[in-house]
Image (cartoon, rainbow, N blue to C red):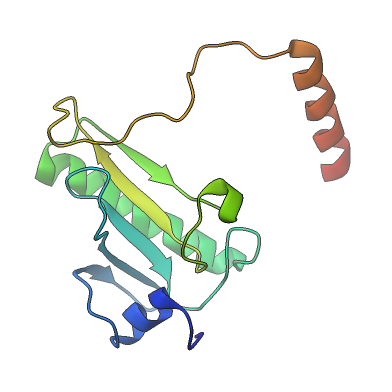
Length: 142
């Protein structure tokens, strides 16, 4: 754990939170700045800075906990869908540097759902640039 980390303080019980679920590896709690009704966070108990830093077993545990909770919010809150969101790096909107997944219930009723898309899906990109980047990544991953 990091002494300077907000989420490490929450996991340790030094900072109050509304706990939703906990196991040996993960801790889930309600987001105090929710994008929708029922928005919560799932974190690994072991500190890792972000998606690039997290150990595979912690990432797996967090993802499985988030999936279990996502299924539950659909039934309990009547959510019409769920977003899982991770922000990796300050330029990708990460503000707390302890890996976390947002579980964001989505609703047709916008009184319950304040989240809006930051881009417009369905607008095609430059297919030559897409193909070139895809090829570059494919080669780097081999």
